[in-house]
Length: 164
Image (tube, rainbow, N blue to C red; front, side):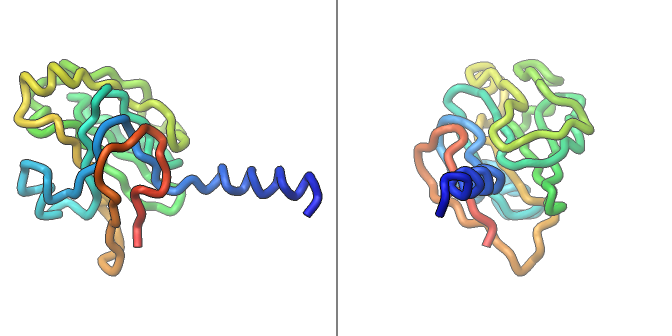
């Protein structure tokens, strides 16, 4: 292997980052979300996060499909046409956008690790049912499932979330 092959291989590895952790905090199973719609996987399989700093990054490369008017949720579409819904907190729609700052718009191309939203974790804890945030793959093939290595996690950490 020559020196240029090394750089080529490195570039390919960077290109396929998989699903990254989207915040500093804790990775949880969907069953730990205090809302049946999410915990029972009624909207799709996925995982949940409990952010310690409120900085929410894109877990995947893709396109922003929607940003809810109330800023509590964002929809992404991966290059493989998998829909990703990031729902920040539980019962946060009632906050009417307060406690959230959005950094992307529908149609924007994003890369895994790019900043999407900042949520005020303390405000969410004080004014919503929960600050646990479900992340769903809403159109996942029924033969597939999401495997999560739960526990403390750092933003942009790889190999903790996998579609199998």
